[in-house]
Length: 341
Image 1: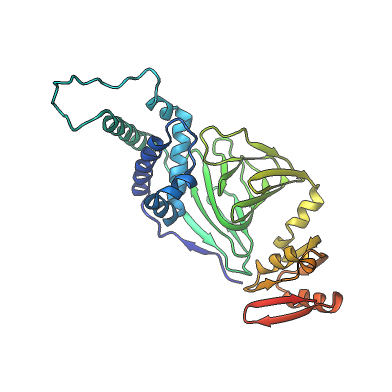
Image 2: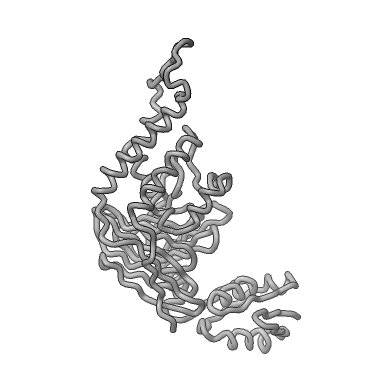
């Protein structure tokens, strides 16, 4: 079993915060009173997209700064309806190259620096950001400095950063089970794409697959909300026995019961439990643990339902079931496995 890899070679906190402050100034000028969407802005600004994708720490710093500004009202203060631009006389040629837009930009930058120097200096991080990851087939438990534990499933990567008033994890991909140490003064946040899961102390799992997420709760309460919008809708609270998942951006919450949640978390004990899952879904589940890609060209076969309990490292047992139990032909070519009638 491969140990979780730790990477602490990240940019200095001060440098990242300064860069995040500068980008927030540009983003705020771009959106004005409209909702801020980082991914939308990144799609139109290559330089920002490169900076955002360079390190998870960059995104965490920007989201944290954006959150601080929303709470303190500084962003709306910069666009107060009572403020008016200075009107220059036609014959006043002094500083003719400095227009109101530039002055506004300088004021915004100045406010950002004040937030940076005052707000962030009082933030007092307990530790620098650290990144952990597991390879395919890997499984690891990572203890955090606050007493919480994170159990990583196969092919999972996340970055953690502890601060004075919050604990933040950026889930880049994969699935993890969290046992969060209770701290009423420091919410525990998991950022997964455009969604943020917030708790004080509980036990739950988060699975991120590209732009979709799934949250399963075994103990306590968690809140799921949008992570980047200024005018975000109230978060959805889910309880023990609930499984929440997004489908095409829409959050669905089902009360499956604790037994169903435990089946979802069978990976913690080294198992894959399939309960009337399509063959396509079952194949995708095994691909999470093995360096193989399944090819099922016949959609009728892909939609067939499969049930069973398998060791996650027993790919051969799953393939034997398909051959002997269903009569399918299994064709292998390098890392591709084709399933045919």
